[in-house]
Image 1 (spheres, rainbow, N blue to C red):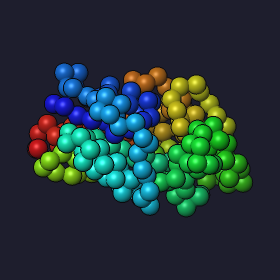
Image 2 (cartoon, rainbow, N blue to C red):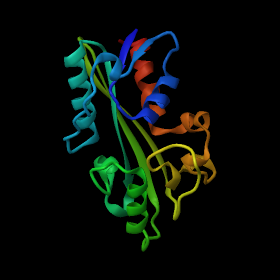
Image 3 (cartoon, rainbow, N blue to C red):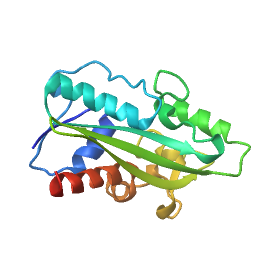
Length: 193
């Protein structure tokens, strides 16, 4: 199986690659000659994931897997959501995004939120979406040194109050939104496609 991963985020690449069969030929965007930042102009995670998968497939003709993920906070009416990567500014600063989110949540006791990943698969036969969701709580401060994005302020409900950033990658992979979406896609791809 030859598959292109349509992301420039090295952390996402690592998480996805670790979940795929080791004998697959998994290619990065650099390896297929795509160096420009992929466009994410959709108003939903679904449209962004499809936009990236379609673009890379049309450029390469190779099976493509793309994702778009967002943190959806209940007390902020689902924000930052589709704007998670650029929540504080267009510079995509993880630190600035976390600071802005914690500031906006200072006066609320409702800390509920969820991480959601939409995975888009595209090849010459099909274009299909898969979703992974993990429920959790937003901490009041950053805790932990692992992970990326909002990991240091998000505690999945099944984690005994640890943030994703307090877990090693193998522990995170057992319960994360991205791994849930990848596992659903793999189940479909290996059994039904």
